[in-house]
Image (tube, rainbow, N blue to C red):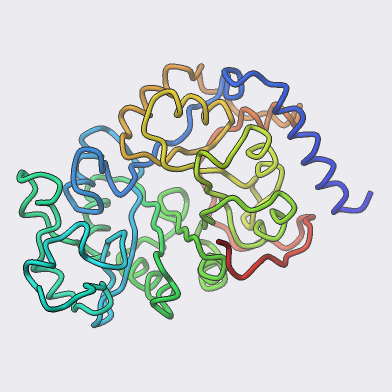
Amino acid sequence: MHARAVVATTTALLGTAALLLPGSDARAGAEPPTVIAHRGASAYAPENTLAAVDKAAELGISWVENDVQRTKDGKLVVLHDDNLKRTTDVEQVFPDRAPWKVKDFTAAEIARLDAGGWFSPVYADARVPTLEQFMDRVELHHQNLLLEIKNPDLYPGIERQTLKVLDKAGWLDPHHLAGRLIVQSFSVDSTRTVHKLKPAVKTGFLGTPPTADLAGYATFADQINPSYGSISRSYVASVHAFTGPHGRPLEVFTWTVNDADTARLVAGYGVDGIITNNPDVVRDAVSEDAGPAQERTSAPVALSVAGRTVGAWTAMGSTSSRSRGPSSVPTSVH
């Protein structure tokens, strides 16, 4: 049978098998999904600050997600929005600098801003961290990093610059690449660029590509990371049916799940990770339903996919020998 036909047939069979599995059984006997603190433990501390990293560590959460933008003088800072209005006091400090875009301020100017007072007076001294500062804090707590490159169209070359900062901080060594770092983006081009520049880095694409396009994404992305409202058990099984650039099945980290019922629902779909503002709530919810951890078995295929676990990642170069469909994907996904 032609390789593309094998993939299509396997995907269809896995989707059908997953639909037949009860939601509560989809991860039966498997480890619960990895829990990722969205912008740090952002329900409890101001997002993307060092305090949010500290809070995640206090809660016992080993994975932290963040967002990277670039300043006027070329420094990388950790901030979700492309402007400073929502999460800092920039309008008070620089009232004549509207529309207060990150790219229009130097790193020194941004360092003057209060990035926590909007959340609570307790955090009024919080600052927007540089990427280096954020990574140092994650390292201090022996945590892992899911790094999102934000708005790459605004910052040409940010992929190479981000990798350079990661390398300088020691995050591109075998230890970190073996299971402590993932770089993701909503941009197809940006995700592909990271993979091309540093094939050993695990990458994720943020979005919900059509199943017909998954083979193309599997050439440069190790994860498909969609919003929780856009997925189903069959979609997750379809993603798992494809092999990524490091020779392992594609993974699914879904976002942003903040309550126990939704966490249990998507865990039942078989997702590999859940990104959340409330990491303790999600962790407790999915841990309640998980049975004893088991080693993944190779058969039957449908059950292996539905009950997959997330193990340590092996840092390897791209593989070109696996069978897959066409490698062309859209250059942008809306």
